[in-house]
Image (cartoon, rainbow, N blue to C red; front, top):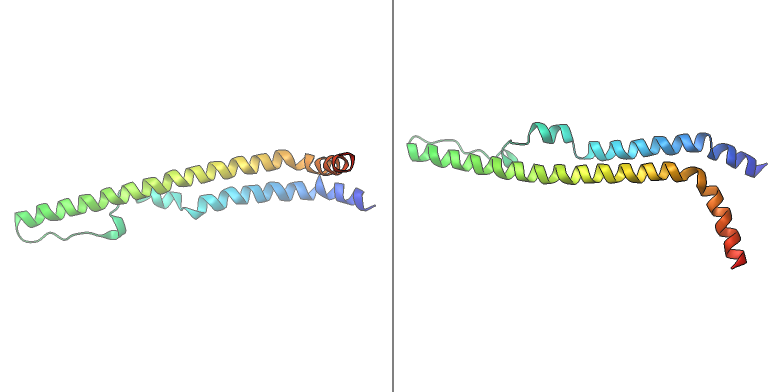
Length: 120
């Protein structure tokens, strides 16, 4: 009775639960990095560091250069974070896909490994 109910759960509710957990794993990785916010603020100044221009022309030029450098650093950091986020999302998607594909074969693998351990 117990093996029958285990197989009934494994290929029914268990498999559905594994698919839902796999989806949640990918969505969690997506939400972790806030990709829409990173894309929207890609060229925003780094940590909102903005230099206000002074009264003279040299102060305006210095402020423009400081603001450009701040935006450049912000875009570099956000681009690196976006690249890392894409790598993490794709790798978690691949792992989740492999988990879903392997799910129906795991009970047979346990039995085969148990028999192989006894024979060897």
